[in-house]
Length: 250
Image 1 (cartoon, helix red, strand yellow):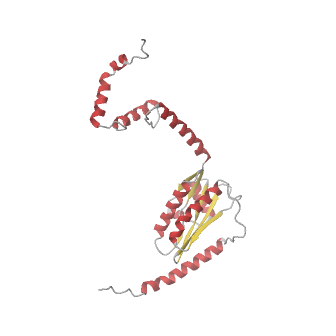
Image 2: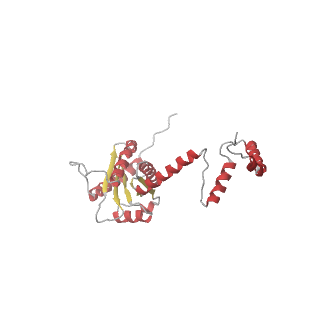
Image 3: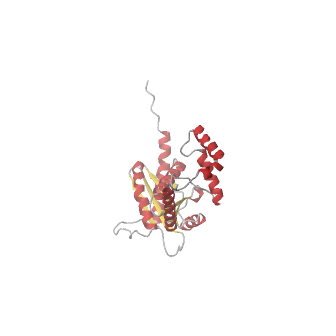
């Protein structure tokens, strides 16, 4: 019988290194991954002249990952990037908490939409309702679109009024108003899924015109409403603070 391949001569020249490596694996007990695999990945990446290398269990898996990487690269070229600016908060309390929480929820939900990449702008000074300022902030981080707006707390209820517009060609495309409101602030959170879905459809050019017969308040009207709400909350705050506190029960 003619042997298909005889590795013994090759192994003899490396016997010392191979046995030492096997002893290290046996001593560590790390038969999957572990320091030996990490060391191999680093040395192989250096030999190939690339920053990183990933060891896998077979050549088939390596080919599979390579094809997935090619598909991901092609998809990344088609993605639209959206900068999410800090929301302007109209509320007397917990402004930072509300601003950060809304940014987290909007970014996580919008980032799950196919074809959308999210760039979150964390600087509170970038919170704005001005289209020009919003476009400039998004352009500074290399985004193609920008999502910005305001959160208003009125009593137990709340509303989130967002604007979505492209960074380029400001004279050709105005903002798309997308808002949600609820009688209880806890009811607002589940509705963010629908809001981010509408944002994604608008960014990808798949949404239609605004529904006929649904009145949309102008920006001046919304600002006037917010000013009135702020005034009412400030007027109510001293009264609540001056109210006598109940005596503790024995």
